Amino acid sequence: MGVKMTLTFEDETMETLRRKAKEDGFVRPSVLARYLLLRGLKEDMKPEITDDQQVIQVAVNNYREIKDYVTEKQLGNINVFAAFAMKQYMTRYPLKTAPRRQDGETLDD
Image (cartoon, rainbow, N blue to C red; front, top):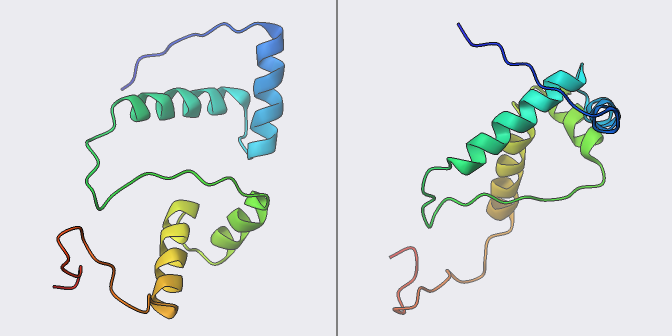
């Protein structure tokens, strides 16, 4: 069971939360506020990222279209779909030569 917390926001902040919640598809501004708070905490407590694992952010102009596509095709979430799409593209169009590390060996060695 969780602990209940009450937050008080200025009217201007609440209006911004209402607008942003509607734009991003959240049911209520309180759900968006909870999401933003927890996301911020997760980002602050990120595990160490390896050389083979990185977090990237990509701004897209057709977010809703992508979100609807992922939902309709039942592809999980946008992050999973993006990683899948990039891997598919790289498989379809591989590099002509294997990339080389600094020591001169190919990554396939």
